[in-house]
Amino acid sequence: SGSEFDEVLVGQGARRVRDLFDKAKARAPCIIFIDEVDSVGSKRVSNSIHPYANQTINQLLSEMDGFNRNEGVIVIAATNRVEDLDKALLRPGRFDVRVTVPKPDLAGRMDIFNFYLEKIVHSPNVDPRTLAKGSTGFTGADIENMVNQAALKAAKECAPEVTMQHLDEARDRVLMGPARTGGRIPDEEANRNTAYHEAGHTLVSLYTKHATPLHKVTIIPRGQSLGHTAMLPEKDEYQMTKGQLLAALDVMMGGRVAEELVFGDDMVTTGAADDLKKATQLAVQMVKAFGMSDKVGLRDFTAEDTSMTSLVKVSDLSPQTAEAIDKEISQVLQDSYMRAKEILTKHKVSEFSGCIIIGTLPFLCLALTNMIILQNGFTENFP
Image (cartoon, rainbow, N blue to C red; front, top):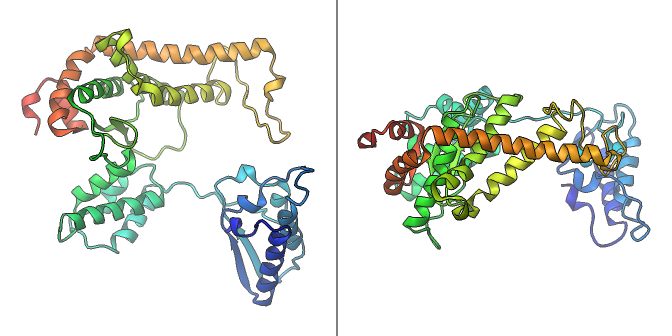
């Protein structure tokens, strides 16, 4: 691991790099694999206070330059922060071949499910393809965690095998976080308020074109949230359209708008804080990075403070341009708020919230099919 090279003593990291490469050359042919290489290969800094701070990476660069052709030593490294690596580390002759490992597609997820399901006793009805379709966006680690959580759930119940129900519950845990069933639990009034909030997200999602399909809504506290509305794409997404991003903004605004319509402006809660934070971040990206604003035009306004690139610096923007960007971000959010308000007013969020409350308070969780039943008023059909 990259973090194992350096210690408090000056020169320790450089010595360990030399020792590593000496051992590799002595045992050639072999492979050196450095995990989390950004810990040792991050961008060098000019710092008179710590003049020895760059010794380790300098030694690594020197060792990689010292290879002769066909010496039999291959150096491979892994990182999730390639943008933090020193440019000298990425030049030809060093780490010049980059392999991006994206999240697995449908076929990849099926293979990963098959791999981990072989390690547990599970029901013959467990279908890896169904699991793969219902886990779009999951990483290999997410799938491993999901199977492990399902096995733990089955063990706690003394079940003879893992079933699809166990796996469905484990997927919800990965998507929404672990349920908080102990400690400080919300009372019925808090659950009602949360149900109204989540109903806002739900209705906007159901009536907004291009919105990510709804998976489940719950008022079971998970992590720091009192409720959660989970979305799950039906297929692998390789890029997002402007319509999809605007729909995501509208769904985020739905919870806050529902609180205003039901309780009034003076009785809104802090429950929308995370929604507003994520909505603001998305609006900033749309305006500054994605070129999805007609007013500020097709230009990249993002800033990279640590390197001299072609990206526009904050200081390079005129006050007028910076003000225009700020106004446009606020306008994107305001337009999203108004679209969500129009939907919730038209489809009577207070009545639908009542159905959500009837459904969720006894059962605390609703799947999409049950939400549609409740939306149409057929509460007696709720299982």
